[in-house]
Image 1: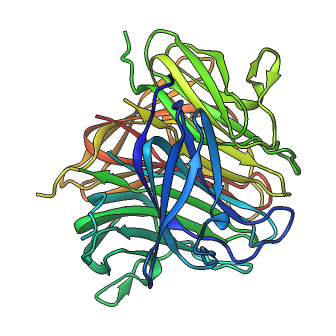
Image 2: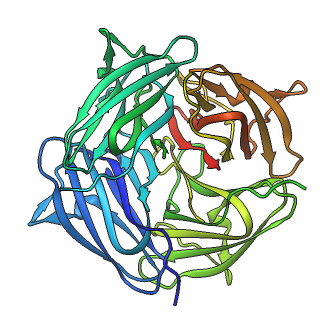
Image 3: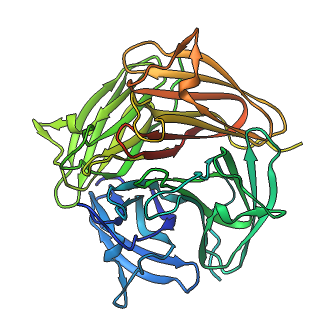
Length: 123
Length: 123
Length: 123
Length: 123
């Protein structure tokens, strides 16, 4: 049995899906999850907005001893994706400890720009 | 009632509003706040400089279950904005726990550059 | 004797070696380790993937009172390097406390993009 | 009297002063310090290398209630600056608690790239 590492609750206040792309790469964000344990991690994502109610209970599974780099543009709730060009924030809740990092590639202009942060863990 | 998450006091030592922009995007910085609780968070921002007294008591409200991505260029104290092209640092104090991230888009040159950090929490 | 600083176990969920480079600089990632103590640090790196078993027991030594900026493209296990263009995650385990930061330079397009995070420490 | 905030010891494993610049901006790194207290902070910087002995006891003062964004290219020890184009790591030790962030602007290619991390605090 491999050990669980990290925390069960993580936050990323600065979420944003760029509206447009140019050049070779597509603008995107990823929620990068690492599950070091032998079991699956069942993850529940909540999306907070500036001016409307949160999107809740978006479910993702990350298998044991695996990483998953989740494109936020693939997340849906009731068939609705996260809107583009709108500031939002992300909550990642897991049934077992995981480690979470967030990265964004912005290719709105011809050349790409990158940013990345470790999500903020709650113990 | 939704739970409060995070800390009440956060710091960002590297603040800087670029003087100029070019291309499609405007240079800007954002203080990204997430308030997971059901109540409003009353936030008091202090701006520290290299060579003058701090700007104190800039107030912002972030509603419950909402995020707010605060452009630093919109912050004022007695009608005065944060000066551009000057190194500064940011203190974010809240009456209830919040989570704070800081991001900067620099488009001084034709293509944009991005950076982001989770602010440093004080327990 | 100089003091040991940091932690023995660190995680970076967002690893990625860009497939191509253009312009003056080569795309690369670095695992940047600082060993403040007087002794050598013996480091064991594990690489986790989305769809296959981890690469384990990649060994690196960082001398006492030295830093080492380890290019991930130089890491091998049984003669096999980390595959390019594939999302992965990194575990850094050391026999003594160290400090670990991760940075990526992406020059897929003509101009370079940079990102960096402090790895997530486990106490 | 204003309160001291943060920690006395901080680490940044990934230091690097780019060798060249192009375009409008000069490549540079900054160690951004915030001293929230009423007293001066006396700071002692150590630079660690991959293949030589550390540069020790580089002294900097950050006044009370002030920030200082220290360009690493301005740091000297016995008249010697930090060499350019060489990987290194940074230790920031203060006599009172401070908060430390590290940022790099790389304009080796025509457009600039930015990265930033909160330094790793030791309690």
